[in-house]
Length: 518
Image (cartoon, rainbow, N blue to C red; front, top):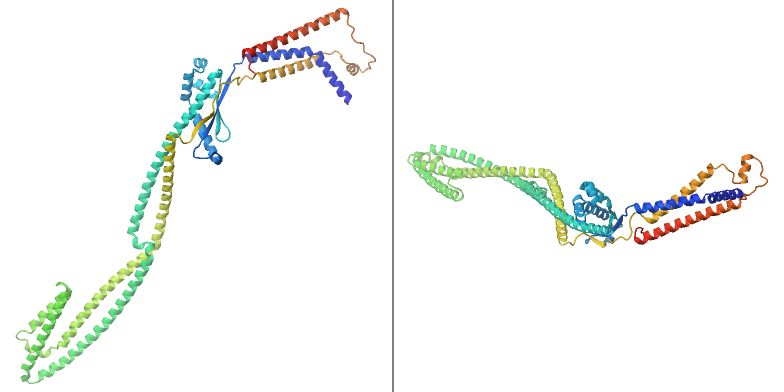
């Protein structure tokens, strides 16, 4: 197994040695082609500037994923503004960029080409890199620094506009929230004034007032019942006195006429006393009531009637009058008046009890309605307080942005003059060219070897003919053939050395003159 592997390696090595000229030629041609490609390819330089997104209100160690996402969004937003058509057109005209393209293509295509040459790369945290590629190193550096400065300018302008717009928006929202809150407070105030006695807070007061009214009602009922009993007693006394008076009147009429004068005098004296008593009662009633009061008018009519009865021609009725009956009748009228007054009071108490019960029954409904009103009010109040906080924050942010002390970009590593092109890369091109040359040379060597039908090894002959090889005779060239072979080898070596000298010398010259930059 090892012998077979060794023989294969020897055969491959022999093949490479036999075809070394072809392999070297392909290698040199590939190197020359790579050098030509490098020299023909336009050199493109790249310069980068490193910027940091500073947030003066937040420590970098306390940045969350959400904060980093906002930073990324801010960088992308400002990058879109910096690479906008108007911004890039100003740079193109200011630095006279892409003169050939501007002659051949419209400005929109030139701007699109410049946008492809600008790269914004967000690094770790709040640091990002701005790069620009172009054919002139100094110009590339200037454009990169200009782009970095544009980032700072656009960020300041954008942050200022954003802070101002945010402040105006929050103020408008706050005004609308305040109006809604004022309307809600007015509705709550009107509701409370309209249904004050039915509010849940008045339930205990209404219950206490209802108990007091019920007690008053019971006392009123007791008073009316007592007065009714007294009225019945007075009516019984009046009936009894009238019965006794009728009996006395009948007895007196049966007596002799000699007593008529005496009775007349007695009756007149009693009438005078009744009139005097009525006058005193009338005076007392007028002191308590107005002249239009029904009791005052009734007393006046009674006094007028009594005065008319005491006039001439009325002496015959004197024996039928009883002052106590008149007094009892007056008490009866007072009693009826008191009963009527108590009944009126009872009706008022019943009305108040009914009203109080309605208030108590309406309390659960008012409680539910008031809860709905207060729930909306709490939500509006919370929203309003939140907007007040946002307004304060927006005004603070706007003030910081106006003083340029808020969130901003800062250049931490300005663009520098590039010393070597970004592309083409000489080392990469030459390595690829040498690899391709070697691959092509070895590939051609194997291809030619496969097309060659001559035998190079005794083993190949034995394998083909199936006969053993007893001996092999080496080639014995003549002196002429040896001289010719040496001459060809010398020419080949000379050509190889000359080519290598010219190739290496040319590379050194081009490197020294700056055509090749490693």
